[in-house]
Amino acid sequence: MAENDVDRFAERFGNRFLTEDDPFNEFPAVGMEPVEAMRLIDEDLVLDGIPERNLATFVTTWMEPEAQRIIAANLHRNFIDHAEYPQTAEIEQRCIRMLAHLFHAPGETTGARTQGSSEAIMLGALSLKWNWRQRREAAGAATDRPNLVFGGDVHVVWEKFCRYFDVEPRIVPLQPDKFTIGAEDVEPHIDENTIGVAAVLGTTFTGHADDIGGINDFLVQLKNDKGLDVPLHIDAASGGFVWPFLYPDHEWDFRLEQVRSINVSGHKYGLVYPGIGWLVFREEADLAPDLVFLENYLGKTDKTFTLNFSTGSAMVLAQYYTLIRFGHAGYSRVMSVMQENAQFLTKRISEIGPFQVIGEGEQQLPLVAFNLAEDVGYDEFDVAWQVAAERGWMLPAYTMPPKADHVRMLRALVKLNLSHALVHTLADDIAEACETLAKKGGATDRERQKVKTGVGY
Ligand SMILES: Cc1ncc(COP(=O)(O)O)c(C=O)c1O
Image (cartoon, rainbow, N blue to C red; front, side):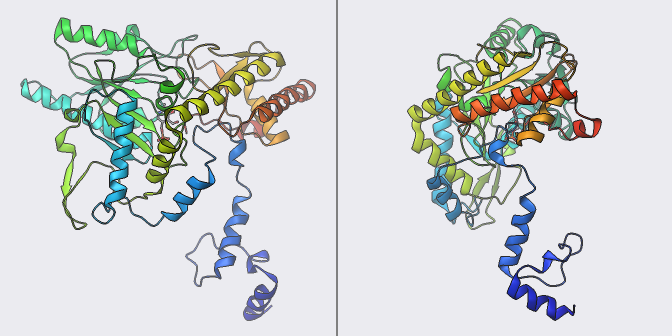
């Protein structure tokens, strides 16, 4: 068919790419009609998983229509243009103040809006490194061998920070039956070159918390006995919006003396779509002044403390929406609903038979981490494959970090859109997948390669 005939038919009967390859390699010589571009992308995305069936991600997959309206109406607003959008900048500051209040900061403080917890951790850990160097220089001591102490239960971002910013990672291995860390674990790794200790509130692997109180007590004692002041950063990527509402009496935040900074992902249990995270300091002095840049590039002298420059405002506004829309009472209710459904899923999974639930009854994120209690002829990766193949659930299977890496795990996040009825269905589907596997045996190697294995996102 001649070129212009193709266009003529496409105009009348639809997309020219019904019979031609999509443009996916070379920069397209000519463009296409808006509706064609939209259709092409929509058709591609049909092959993606359905976010509501994604039991792997901590990240929000549903927001209220009013929040969606705020987001859609503000996609064109560059967050970094503080001079042009001063109200947006003020709203960022309100969010930081509200989070500092939620985390019991002792007074006025500072922080930053970030793309997520990863950027917040990079910035927070940089501040630890800068402050450590300043202390060492003031004492006339060497500054060439900084180290950071954390457990094997952290998200990969902590190792990334160490590699990108030249800090020795001192990783406390997990134990075959203990998947979080405490004071006795970090103690042997700390010395005068330790820029800080990172502890997790709500681990990526099982949703439990490190013994933050115990680690704090140990660091206070170290300071009093030996004059070694080692700051504690809390990675509350998921837990920062869960613990204050489900376990308000548990002290893990600025109520503890050595906790100097906290990161939290707004796009996880903060209930906002991806990309929003927060870094909050205990007090202004915890942010190394050298890391703050003054620039007047966009019309007014402004302070910046970010790894990125231009970025959207929509998720900052969406975060402010969720904070004022839900308030303390609303977040408490939402977290309780998720927890209740997670407990219900725990019960149903225990009843299926071959599974054991990890850390049941302990303080935990609203999720169920579980594995097979005995050899049943198939394993956790087979179960993940089978529920995906039969019902499209994205249930991740993975192995734990060293020295618990012989332990396989399945993990189902219970978010607001996993209702009581859907929990029933999910549990039935897992039971049915087990029945299929018991009859036909495990998945093939090719099938197992396709299982969702990522844990932290
Ligand atoms: C404990 C923990 N820290 C950090 C991160 C990274 O967070 P983000 O995806 O917001 O960059 C995650 C992500 O799951 C996490 O679970």
